[in-house]
Length: 64
Image (cartoon, rainbow, N blue to C red):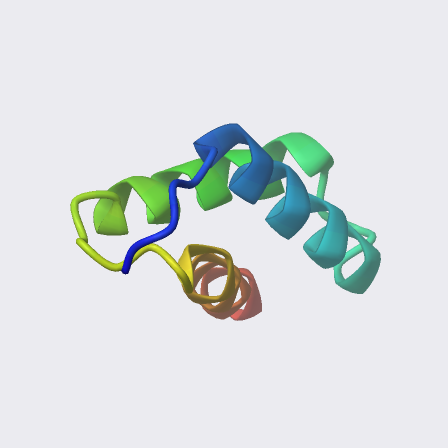
C-alpha cells in the first residue's frame, strides 16, 4: 500500500541531508534539484521510497 507523501517535506529532508554532505552547494540549488527529481517520479504508485530515490538522484547530479 502506498503512503501519502508531502512533496515539500521530501524536498526539505533531502536538502537537509545533502547540504551537510555538500557544504559548498547552496541549499537553494539542492532544493531545486530535489524538486526536479521528485517531479520525475511523482506519478509512481508506490511512494514509500521517494525520499531515498530523490536523494540518490540529486547526489548523482551533484557529483558531476
